[in-house]
Structure formats: C-alpha cells, structure tokens
Amino acid sequence: MTAELASGFTEPVRHAQQGFRAALDALSRPGRITHVAADGPTAPGLGPASTTLMLSLADFETPVWLGAGAAASGEYFRFHCGCPLTRERGGAVIACLANPAEALPLADFELGSDKAPEASATLIIQVAALDDQGSFEFSGPGIDGVHRIGIQGLPTEWLRERAMLAPLFPRGVDIFLTSGNRLCGLPRTTIIKETPCMSR
Image (cartoon, rainbow, N blue to C red):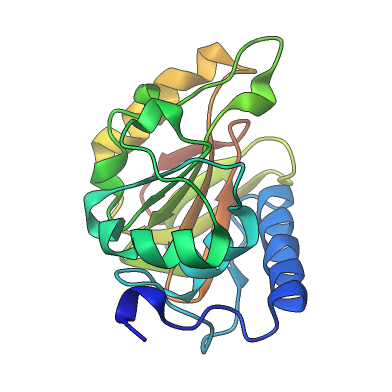
C-alpha cells in the first residue's frame, strides 16, 4: 500500500462519529482546544487533527481544495472519502491547508449568500502550534467574555483578511485551526485578534 493510500479510520463509522462530534464541539466553543486521538490516521503532509476532520466531514458530495502543502494527500482522501478534488478554491466545500498563508486571499473561497450562508466553504488550516494560553483573543457568540489561546504560525495578513469578511455576515467561512492532534473552531461569528499577553 502506498503512502497516499495508507490506513484511514480502523473503525470508520465510530471514528467518523467521534471526529464529527469533535468538530461540532470545537465550533460551539470557539477558541477552546479540542483533542483527537494522537495515534489517529495521518494523511501525507497532515497531522491527526486535520486528517480526522477530513475523514469525518468529506464525502462524495463535497468538492475539496488542497493547498500546496497538503496536495500529496489528494489520492488518500479520494480513496478514503470518495471526495472530488477541485483546482478552483471557489468551487470547494472543504479546503485543507498545511500552511495558513496558502489560504490567502480568503475572499476567493465560497462565502455563501445572504439567503444560503450554509453554502460557504469550511477551511481546515494547520498551524505550527496551539496552546491553552497565549496572545490571541477570541470573543463573540459562544464565548463568555473573552478567551485567550496561543497560535503559532498565523500571519498578520490572515487576521486582517478575515476581519474584512465580518461586514459580509451572514456570508463568510468557518475555520478549524489544527496542530498535531489539537484543533479549535473559528466560526464566522467569532472575533479574533492578537493582543499582548498580560502578566499576572
């Protein structure tokens, strides 16, 4: 078996359900770090969290766009998910990227419409690290006040572009940030900004 067709979920139904629950939990609790199995499947160029989300969310009805860093995983996901791959980011229902910079410009992805905001794309973006404490501040629906986490590898341009999408609400994109077996949700309703860490 080649690397591209390496093992997926050992128990596809149960593990896909667990992955889907992790995705829902992450989006309903923005900025809170959720974990998947550290020894879970890994597609070429991707960690366990990104791979688990893809195996749980992608199917034959979800065109997928892969960034350059995740391109080697194309055959893996076509085999395990049956998902079609698209070369046009605007045609993707799910996009998976191994580098946040590859997501720019964010406005090139499908943003949905005022009448059908659910038609927008979902982005799975790997970052260098996710930590329970740090300089990134999350606020908005589902968050009591503000919540801070650490994110390594998220460029400032990425934050600016995402902020530019806010006036388009309910249009926009929903995002999962992942690192290793960690993930956190970033719905379009959540405000994220980088602020200096306050010493205690």
